[in-house]
Image (cartoon, rainbow, N blue to C red):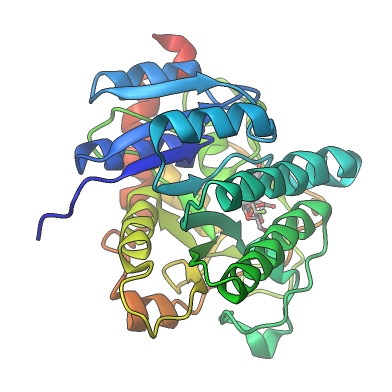
Amino acid sequence: MAHAPERILVTGGAGFIGSHAALRLLEEGHLVTIVDDLSRGNSGAIEALRQVGPVAFVEGDIGDRDLMRQIMREQDTQCVWHFAALAYVGESVEQPLRYYRQNATASINLLSVMDELNIEKLVFSSTCATYGEPETNLIPIREDCPQQPINPYGRSKLLVEHAVRDLAIARHARGQSFHAAMLRYFNVAGSDPEGRLGEDHDPETHLIPICLEAVLGRRDSVKIFGTDYPTPDGTCIRDFVHVSDLIDAHLVAMRSLGASASDETVRAYNVGTGSGLSVREVVEACRAVTGVDFPVEEVARRPGDPPKLCADAGRIEAVLGWTAARPQIEQMVKDAWRWRQQHPFGFRSV
Ligand code: UFG
């Protein structure tokens, strides 16, 4: 079924997930405006998006209310997909105030402009890091699992979840509508299956891109952080979801916003496949897909890593009909590898 085009603001649209979101929105015929300060995003991603369709790009800070007011007024924004954030757990422990400022304060400024301009629809990029380290009997994690984040990154995202809910309550009390989907991502991997975009962080901390750098000889080895976890092979377990599937989840979530008067106006959804893979299993998948047997080094645990994070994705399936179409880790690695081979130095390769 064709859907009417909407005018959508994508914050953080030069980042890994935000750029994949913008790509899909362009393909679906929506009118896309990106705001990104390029502190973590890549201008190369914007260039890649321009090959796909007309995209308005503003380099700026989403916490700048005057700027955001001007952009959202000019573009007559109907819906915001909010990705812009800092997302390194370790860094958040070292620089907590930076995380609270850029993730929480800036988001609150963005919400206040949305409120002022009566922009009623939001899809918010939240995280499984808001759950912290759930008790074993609460894994796979459901959305009603207590949210007790163990680092400033998770806490900064949880603050925004609270602000979104409170804004919805206040607007409804004023007779104004507001609908939001808060998607709690598990470990996002892969890249555009057509190879137009990829994952390129600086610094890179994520397991699969690090393995691919080792395949390319850009690292001597991959360090496995901790082999003494209470898991079958002693390494951490994570739930990996393909970025294309994650973006599908955003699309169905957006379409559901305000679709029925009886809907809850703010809803949180886990986005994961529901199956956990150990770090060793992911390393093996990277070796198998690339055919390169890169060396690994077993080292101490990385502080702040919960032993096991795995989603119960039952709610998003039941309510929105979403399930992962590409749940195999091999597919995620294959797609990430295709882009990496073409871009051995990331977006700077072009
Ligand atoms: N790992 C290694 N070696 C590496 C890199 C990672 O062993 O070189 C391990 C980690 O210790 C972890 C697993 O691989 O057990 C996955 O690590 P990533 O850094 O790829 O991803 P995280 O699980 O740490 O992070 C993800 C999101 C964060 C989010 C977090 C919630 O990327 O944004 O989940 O815990 F906050």
